[in-house]
Length: 211
Picture 1: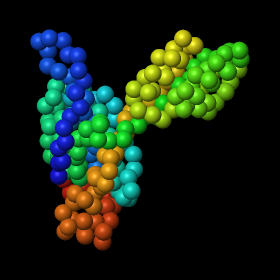
Picture 2 (picture 1 turned 90 degrees about the vertical axis):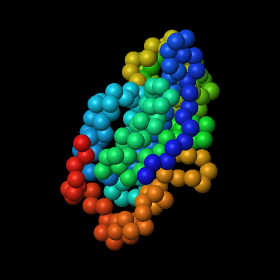
Picture 3 (picture 1 turned 90 degrees about the horizontal axis):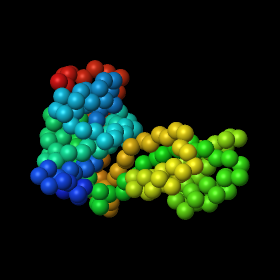
Picture 4 (picture 1 turned 30 degrees about the vertical axis):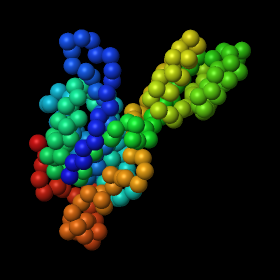
């Protein structure tokens, strides 16, 4: 089942070129070996540009959630949804509009820090509600969970000190309010009863293979 919502646009495309839009796509998938590879292969074949991809467990055993951020022309959101919805591994797909969702990323940033700079850096990151999670003689590791624009701002403010290394998880998102993408709201009643009785068997084989 696919649920469509409006996409968020990125303004400022040059004249004569299609506007670039950013879409956050949430897909609930069967937690089985090879699912991520099949999804990534589909994106590669179709030429979709993945800005970030985050995968994790959900509240239901045997179900994983993929949060995929894609960039491209306005119609790319519908294209991604249709292609994902064809895959046997995918339970449900939803494109979440950014202003109707809570979105977050986690970043770990290793920044150069002489002893005489540490107080200055700590005062800076306090503005962003970030924290220091590791200290060495010449560096600090800073952790921040926030929206992407807040992370970008922190990174820019830390660059003058010298960023040695950085990792970001990619975006995760949940729709605001009572709406969810939970499996129990999207699976047909008969299929839901089957899974309640038999489980999802994440270690078993699928009856069909996704192309």
